[in-house]
Image (cartoon, rainbow, N blue to C red; front, side, top):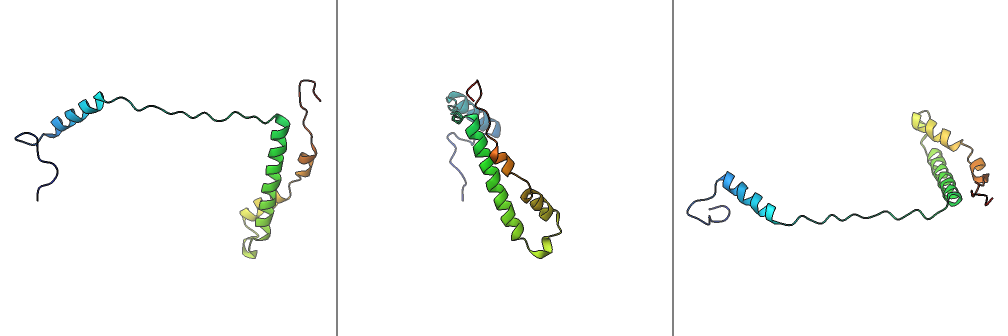
Length: 107
């Protein structure tokens, strides 16, 4: 059973001829257009970004605390449990009470 296409000429092309034909075909094609997407500009001001970051930290701390309480007894003396406990014991309330300045004399 024959494989592939039948040769166009009397004999099949050699590997070098096939490669040369492929390179010529590739050289004749136009290069693909490069599509670049720009990231949207940050529109939040610094105090809003601060409040969002603190809220994210508080949410993560709550998740880690829940993970620590659901940890099995056999894993309470592991480095994972120690790291979870250190995160859960951080006092992030002081961060939430800070109101950063608006800047440029707009305080």
